[in-house]
Image (cartoon, each protein chain N blue to C red):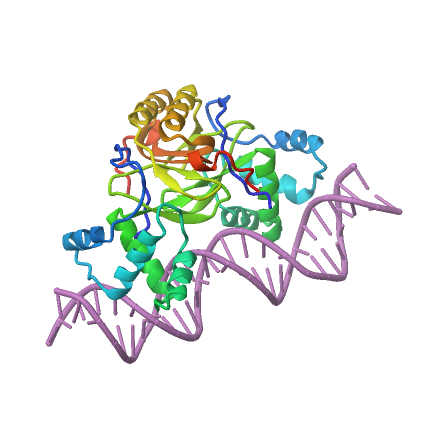
Length: 162
Length: 162
DNA sequence: ATTTTTGCAAATCATTTGCATATAT
DNA sequence: ATATATGCAAATGATTTGCAAAAAT
């Protein structure tokens, strides 16, 4: 019951997506959530993953690899909290898989590298204008949108991807 | 193995999304697919749904309601074929659910009404420019994108939604 | 103390698969 | 004829749930 990814447009702040564990504490202060060991651990695992996208299963595996025990359900539940807090966002890969990426609060779009998986924030005022135009053309009152971009990041552009 | 929704930008043609069963036959001519009773039936069910989004389970239920028997697997398999043919597109609702919408070949974006579920095609050359700009800014070679817009359609804008 | 969170295992849900039979070409 | 498609039921995979025990406030 806490899985909405309604994406509002608002400029992103920093260029590259990644998560600061301290953000968790900040986020928790605002809510009635508790700072527990599993949550700390998961935040750390996410932070350590850097800029790539990951699934709940990935986190579970990461935890296992480091002998950190967290239950499967806890991973999902924590991910939900982080979604609510705006610390991660759920994305849908081109093949329909669900994944998550770490992001700043109020960040809202990213380009995902199809070779290495890295994701980079997109700050795009222009998109806002484009969406306004679409609203005008279709007559819809557009409340939310979701944009996912897939491509090859600068360092993967030479790759023969295979 | 036929579920890619990599979305290329290309102008849509007609304003409102809905599916013409005849399109199936056209689509089949080009391929080595066969025109079977279950496929006809499913096309009809989709067409009858009009412009809303639907899930595989919805179709299965629709079929049941009309005493048309199609196996669950056939629904999924047919949907895959229709995806390949570009007759339907897979979308991800704001809550992360997967759904499908009927669409014209080479159509590629739609606004989905959060009140009634209707979807309308978006013809947007401007988006193309926006995406080009994003590519330039981030340094990514953008190969595909997916854009989903959610809002209230003209007739639902008075609604007190829920 | 009291409320939230956890871990587990079982439950649920969507989607896929194997395989023998049926059907379109 | 022959390749493709179907239906079934079982398999898979992801996510959720109930509940008693554990931890945070």
